[in-house]
Length: 347
Image (cartoon, one colour):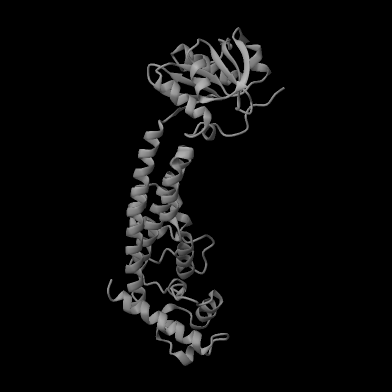
Protein backbone atom coordinates (compact mmCIF):
# COMPACT_ATOMS: atom_id res chain seq x y z
CA UNK A 1 0.00 0.00 0.00
CA UNK A 2 1.30 3.46 -0.84
CA UNK A 3 1.80 5.91 2.01
CA UNK A 4 0.50 9.47 2.04
CA UNK A 5 2.62 12.64 2.00
CA UNK A 6 4.97 12.98 4.94
CA UNK A 7 5.23 16.79 5.23
CA UNK A 8 2.80 18.64 7.55
CA UNK A 9 -0.20 19.96 5.67
CA UNK A 10 0.25 23.63 6.70
CA UNK A 11 3.84 23.64 5.36
CA UNK A 12 2.67 22.26 2.03
CA UNK A 13 0.17 25.03 1.56
CA UNK A 14 2.16 28.09 2.61
CA UNK A 15 2.38 31.00 0.17
CA UNK A 16 5.19 30.58 -2.31
CA UNK A 17 4.63 26.84 -2.86
CA UNK A 18 3.32 25.61 -6.19
CA UNK A 19 0.20 24.12 -4.65
CA UNK A 20 -0.71 27.31 -2.81
CA UNK A 21 -0.09 29.42 -5.90
CA UNK A 22 -2.49 27.20 -7.81
CA UNK A 23 -5.09 27.36 -5.04
CA UNK A 24 -4.90 31.15 -4.94
CA UNK A 25 -5.42 31.24 -8.71
CA UNK A 26 -8.52 29.08 -8.31
CA UNK A 27 -9.84 31.44 -5.62
CA UNK A 28 -9.17 34.49 -7.78
CA UNK A 29 -10.90 32.77 -10.70
CA UNK A 30 -14.03 32.32 -8.56
CA UNK A 31 -14.24 28.58 -9.20
CA UNK A 32 -14.30 25.69 -6.77
CA UNK A 33 -12.05 22.66 -6.44
CA UNK A 34 -11.59 19.38 -4.58
CA UNK A 35 -7.98 18.17 -4.45
CA UNK A 36 -6.70 15.01 -2.75
CA UNK A 37 -3.11 15.34 -1.50
CA UNK A 38 -1.77 11.89 -2.28
CA UNK A 39 -3.11 8.50 -3.21
CA UNK A 40 -3.48 5.02 -1.72
CA UNK A 41 -5.51 1.85 -2.13
CA UNK A 42 -8.45 3.23 -0.15
CA UNK A 43 -8.70 6.24 -2.47
CA UNK A 44 -8.54 4.07 -5.58
CA UNK A 45 -11.36 1.91 -4.20
CA UNK A 46 -13.75 4.89 -4.02
CA UNK A 47 -12.63 6.55 -7.29
CA UNK A 48 -14.44 6.23 -10.62
CA UNK A 49 -14.36 8.09 -13.91
CA UNK A 50 -12.03 10.94 -14.67
CA UNK A 51 -8.81 10.57 -16.60
CA UNK A 52 -5.18 9.89 -15.77
CA UNK A 53 -2.66 12.54 -16.83
CA UNK A 54 0.41 12.13 -14.58
CA UNK A 55 2.02 15.49 -15.38
CA UNK A 56 4.22 17.79 -13.29
CA UNK A 57 2.25 19.97 -10.89
CA UNK A 58 2.05 23.60 -11.94
CA UNK A 59 -0.09 26.42 -10.62
CA UNK A 60 -1.61 27.09 -14.05
CA UNK A 61 -2.31 23.40 -14.60
CA UNK A 62 -4.08 23.13 -11.25
CA UNK A 63 -6.14 26.21 -12.08
CA UNK A 64 -7.25 24.90 -15.50
CA UNK A 65 -8.14 21.41 -14.26
CA UNK A 66 -10.23 22.90 -11.44
CA UNK A 67 -12.62 24.26 -14.07
CA UNK A 68 -13.89 20.69 -14.62
CA UNK A 69 -16.21 18.80 -12.32
CA UNK A 70 -14.75 16.11 -10.09
CA UNK A 71 -11.65 15.78 -7.95
CA UNK A 72 -7.98 16.31 -8.74
CA UNK A 73 -5.57 13.71 -7.34
CA UNK A 74 -1.92 14.54 -6.65
CA UNK A 75 1.02 12.20 -6.16
CA UNK A 76 2.26 11.33 -2.67
CA UNK A 77 5.28 13.54 -3.29
CA UNK A 78 2.88 16.35 -4.26
CA UNK A 79 4.93 17.17 -7.32
CA UNK A 80 2.64 15.66 -9.98
CA UNK A 81 -1.02 15.74 -10.96
CA UNK A 82 -2.07 12.12 -11.37
CA UNK A 83 -5.71 12.43 -12.36
CA UNK A 84 -8.52 14.94 -12.81
CA UNK A 85 -12.33 14.96 -13.04
CA UNK A 86 -12.39 11.94 -10.69
CA UNK A 87 -15.72 11.03 -9.08
CA UNK A 88 -15.25 10.12 -5.39
CA UNK A 89 -17.80 7.94 -3.56
CA UNK A 90 -16.86 7.74 0.14
CA UNK A 91 -19.03 5.79 2.54
CA UNK A 92 -22.24 7.64 3.35
CA UNK A 93 -22.13 6.11 6.84
CA UNK A 94 -19.17 8.30 7.80
CA UNK A 95 -20.27 11.24 9.96
CA UNK A 96 -19.87 14.76 8.62
CA UNK A 97 -20.77 18.17 9.98
CA UNK A 98 -20.55 19.85 6.57
CA UNK A 99 -23.55 20.95 4.51
CA UNK A 100 -22.15 21.64 1.02
CA UNK A 101 -21.70 18.68 -1.30
CA UNK A 102 -18.01 19.36 -1.98
CA UNK A 103 -17.15 19.80 1.69
CA UNK A 104 -19.15 16.75 2.76
CA UNK A 105 -17.31 14.64 0.22
CA UNK A 106 -13.96 16.08 1.27
CA UNK A 107 -14.51 15.35 4.95
CA UNK A 108 -15.63 11.78 4.31
CA UNK A 109 -12.75 11.10 1.90
CA UNK A 110 -10.26 12.42 4.47
CA UNK A 111 -11.76 10.19 7.16
CA UNK A 112 -11.91 7.08 4.96
CA UNK A 113 -8.54 7.36 3.20
CA UNK A 114 -6.52 9.19 5.88
CA UNK A 115 -5.29 11.52 3.13
CA UNK A 116 -5.50 15.33 3.38
CA UNK A 117 -8.15 16.81 1.11
CA UNK A 118 -8.28 20.46 0.06
CA UNK A 119 -11.40 22.28 -1.05
CA UNK A 120 -11.84 25.70 -2.58
CA UNK A 121 -15.25 27.29 -2.10
CA UNK A 122 -16.35 29.32 -5.13
CA UNK A 123 -19.06 31.15 -3.17
CA UNK A 124 -16.95 31.96 -0.08
CA UNK A 125 -13.54 32.24 -1.80
CA UNK A 126 -12.00 30.16 1.00
CA UNK A 127 -9.49 27.31 1.07
CA UNK A 128 -10.13 24.49 3.56
CA UNK A 129 -7.99 21.51 4.48
CA UNK A 130 -9.62 18.33 5.77
CA UNK A 131 -7.23 16.00 7.57
CA UNK A 132 -8.56 13.07 9.58
CA UNK A 133 -11.63 14.39 11.36
CA UNK A 134 -10.52 18.02 11.46
CA UNK A 135 -10.97 21.00 9.16
CA UNK A 136 -8.70 24.02 8.86
CA UNK A 137 -9.61 27.15 6.88
CA UNK A 138 -6.48 28.74 5.46
CA UNK A 139 -6.28 32.52 5.77
CA UNK A 140 -5.35 34.55 2.72
CA UNK A 141 -1.68 35.61 2.47
CA UNK A 142 -2.61 39.27 2.92
CA UNK A 143 -4.50 38.41 6.11
CA UNK A 144 -1.51 36.50 7.51
CA UNK A 145 0.86 39.32 6.56
CA UNK A 146 -1.35 41.89 8.25
CA UNK A 147 -1.45 39.86 11.48
CA UNK A 148 2.30 39.21 11.33
CA UNK A 149 2.99 42.92 10.85
CA UNK A 150 0.80 43.74 13.85
CA UNK A 151 2.66 41.12 15.93
CA UNK A 152 6.03 42.59 14.91
CA UNK A 153 4.81 46.07 15.89
CA UNK A 154 3.70 44.77 19.29
CA UNK A 155 7.03 43.02 19.69
CA UNK A 156 8.91 46.25 19.03
CA UNK A 157 6.86 48.05 21.69
CA UNK A 158 7.38 45.28 24.25
CA UNK A 159 11.14 45.30 23.58
CA UNK A 160 11.32 49.04 24.27
CA UNK A 161 9.41 48.60 27.54
CA UNK A 162 11.62 45.65 28.52
CA UNK A 163 14.79 47.70 28.21
CA UNK A 164 13.19 50.58 30.06
CA UNK A 165 12.40 48.14 32.89
CA UNK A 166 15.96 46.80 32.78
CA UNK A 167 17.35 50.34 33.04
CA UNK A 168 15.17 50.95 36.09
CA UNK A 169 16.34 47.65 37.56
CA UNK A 170 19.97 48.62 36.99
CA UNK A 171 19.45 51.93 38.79
CA UNK A 172 17.98 50.12 41.78
CA UNK A 173 20.77 47.53 41.73
CA UNK A 174 23.39 50.27 41.84
CA UNK A 175 21.65 51.92 44.79
CA UNK A 176 21.07 48.61 46.57
CA UNK A 177 17.28 48.86 46.81
CA UNK A 178 15.98 46.16 44.46
CA UNK A 179 12.72 44.49 45.48
CA UNK A 180 10.81 41.50 44.18
CA UNK A 181 8.38 43.97 42.61
CA UNK A 182 11.17 45.38 40.40
CA UNK A 183 12.20 41.90 39.30
CA UNK A 184 8.58 40.92 38.64
CA UNK A 185 8.11 43.88 36.28
CA UNK A 186 11.13 42.80 34.23
CA UNK A 187 9.97 39.18 34.25
CA UNK A 188 6.56 40.33 32.97
CA UNK A 189 8.19 42.03 30.00
CA UNK A 190 10.28 38.99 29.12
CA UNK A 191 7.24 36.72 29.15
CA UNK A 192 5.16 39.14 27.08
CA UNK A 193 7.90 39.24 24.46
CA UNK A 194 8.13 35.45 24.45
CA UNK A 195 4.40 35.09 23.81
CA UNK A 196 4.23 37.69 21.07
CA UNK A 197 7.38 36.29 19.45
CA UNK A 198 5.93 32.77 19.46
CA UNK A 199 2.75 34.01 17.80
CA UNK A 200 4.74 36.01 15.25
CA UNK A 201 6.90 32.97 14.45
CA UNK A 202 3.79 30.90 13.63
CA UNK A 203 2.51 33.65 11.35
CA UNK A 204 5.87 34.02 9.62
CA UNK A 205 5.98 30.27 9.02
CA UNK A 206 2.47 30.52 7.56
CA UNK A 207 3.72 33.09 5.05
CA UNK A 208 6.24 30.65 3.61
CA UNK A 209 8.51 32.28 1.04
CA UNK A 210 6.58 35.54 1.38
CA UNK A 211 7.60 35.88 5.02
CA UNK A 212 11.32 36.54 4.55
CA UNK A 213 11.32 40.26 5.40
CA UNK A 214 8.97 39.88 8.35
CA UNK A 215 11.09 36.94 9.54
CA UNK A 216 14.20 39.12 9.50
CA UNK A 217 12.37 41.73 11.58
CA UNK A 218 11.32 39.04 14.05
CA UNK A 219 14.91 37.86 14.41
CA UNK A 220 16.14 41.42 14.86
CA UNK A 221 13.67 42.18 17.67
CA UNK A 222 14.41 38.96 19.57
CA UNK A 223 18.19 38.97 19.11
CA UNK A 224 20.14 38.86 22.35
CA UNK A 225 17.14 38.38 24.63
CA UNK A 226 17.83 34.74 25.54
CA UNK A 227 21.35 35.45 26.93
CA UNK A 228 19.95 38.46 28.77
CA UNK A 229 17.25 36.35 30.41
CA UNK A 230 19.91 33.80 31.38
CA UNK A 231 21.99 36.50 33.10
CA UNK A 232 18.91 37.73 34.97
CA UNK A 233 18.27 34.21 36.16
CA UNK A 234 21.84 33.78 37.39
CA UNK A 235 21.53 37.05 39.30
CA UNK A 236 18.25 36.32 41.08
CA UNK A 237 17.52 32.59 41.02
CA UNK A 238 16.74 31.46 44.60
CA UNK A 239 19.34 29.04 45.93
CA UNK A 240 16.80 26.29 46.57
CA UNK A 241 14.88 26.69 43.31
CA UNK A 242 14.64 23.59 41.11
CA UNK A 243 13.42 25.34 37.97
CA UNK A 244 14.52 28.32 35.83
CA UNK A 245 13.55 31.73 37.18
CA UNK A 246 11.06 32.60 34.43
CA UNK A 247 9.69 29.09 33.82
CA UNK A 248 6.72 29.51 36.17
CA UNK A 249 5.32 32.38 34.10
CA UNK A 250 4.33 29.99 31.33
CA UNK A 251 1.54 28.71 33.56
CA UNK A 252 -0.13 32.13 33.77
CA UNK A 253 -2.80 33.10 31.27
CA UNK A 254 -2.65 36.48 29.55
CA UNK A 255 -4.81 38.20 32.17
CA UNK A 256 -2.84 36.72 35.08
CA UNK A 257 0.40 37.90 33.50
CA UNK A 258 -0.70 41.50 34.15
CA UNK A 259 -1.03 40.75 37.87
CA UNK A 260 2.36 41.59 39.36
CA UNK A 261 1.50 39.68 42.54
CA UNK A 262 0.96 36.44 40.60
CA UNK A 263 4.09 37.07 38.57
CA UNK A 264 6.12 37.53 41.75
CA UNK A 265 4.77 34.31 43.21
CA UNK A 266 5.64 32.44 40.00
CA UNK A 267 9.35 33.28 40.22
CA UNK A 268 10.08 30.56 42.77
CA UNK A 269 10.84 32.53 45.94
CA UNK A 270 9.80 31.38 49.42
CA UNK A 271 6.28 32.24 50.52
CA UNK A 272 7.74 34.69 53.04
CA UNK A 273 9.17 36.85 50.23
CA UNK A 274 6.64 39.53 49.21
CA UNK A 275 6.71 42.22 46.55
CA UNK A 276 8.52 44.76 48.73
CA UNK A 277 11.09 42.27 50.03
CA UNK A 278 14.67 43.32 49.17
CA UNK A 279 16.72 41.21 46.76
CA UNK A 280 20.48 41.07 46.33
CA UNK A 281 21.60 40.53 42.71
CA UNK A 282 24.86 38.64 42.24
CA UNK A 283 26.11 40.90 39.47
CA UNK A 284 26.34 38.64 36.40
CA UNK A 285 24.29 40.99 34.22
CA UNK A 286 26.33 44.06 35.06
CA UNK A 287 29.67 42.32 34.66
CA UNK A 288 28.52 41.05 31.25
CA UNK A 289 28.29 44.67 30.05
CA UNK A 290 32.03 45.13 30.54
CA UNK A 291 33.86 44.59 27.21
CA UNK A 292 36.66 42.00 27.05
CA UNK A 293 35.95 40.63 30.53
CA UNK A 294 36.05 36.80 30.40
CA UNK A 295 33.03 34.94 31.76
CA UNK A 296 35.33 32.90 34.00
CA UNK A 297 36.61 36.10 35.61
CA UNK A 298 33.05 37.24 36.29
CA UNK A 299 32.21 33.93 37.96
CA UNK A 300 35.36 34.07 40.10
CA UNK A 301 34.62 37.63 41.24
CA UNK A 302 31.04 36.79 42.21
CA UNK A 303 32.12 33.64 44.02
CA UNK A 304 34.59 35.74 46.04
CA UNK A 305 32.50 38.84 46.78
CA UNK A 306 29.03 37.26 46.85
CA UNK A 307 26.90 39.97 45.27
CA UNK A 308 26.84 43.18 43.25
CA UNK A 309 26.83 45.46 46.30
CA UNK A 310 30.21 44.11 47.41
CA UNK A 311 31.60 44.33 43.88
CA UNK A 312 30.56 47.97 43.52
CA UNK A 313 32.44 48.97 46.68
CA UNK A 314 35.48 46.76 46.13
CA UNK A 315 38.75 48.57 45.46
CA UNK A 316 41.19 47.63 42.74
CA UNK A 317 43.65 45.90 45.09
CA UNK A 318 40.78 43.89 46.60
CA UNK A 319 39.75 42.73 43.15
CA UNK A 320 43.26 41.49 42.41
CA UNK A 321 43.09 39.24 45.46
CA UNK A 322 40.79 36.99 43.45
CA UNK A 323 42.62 34.18 41.67
CA UNK A 324 43.12 34.95 37.99
CA UNK A 325 42.25 38.65 38.25
CA UNK A 326 45.16 40.77 37.07
CA UNK A 327 45.61 44.48 37.71
CA UNK A 328 44.44 45.23 34.17
CA UNK A 329 41.33 43.10 34.67
CA UNK A 330 40.69 44.76 38.03
CA UNK A 331 40.88 48.22 36.44
CA UNK A 332 38.55 47.02 33.69
CA UNK A 333 36.03 45.91 36.30
CA UNK A 334 36.30 49.10 38.33
CA UNK A 335 35.91 51.34 35.25
CA UNK A 336 33.07 49.22 33.89
CA UNK A 337 31.07 49.22 37.10
CA UNK A 338 31.71 52.95 37.55
CA UNK A 339 30.28 53.51 34.08
CA UNK A 340 27.22 51.45 35.00
CA UNK A 341 26.73 53.55 38.13
CA UNK A 342 27.11 56.82 36.24
CA UNK A 343 24.72 55.75 33.54
CA UNK A 344 22.11 54.72 36.12
CA UNK A 345 22.01 58.29 37.43
CA UNK A 346 20.52 59.46 34.11
CA UNK A 347 17.67 56.91 34.07
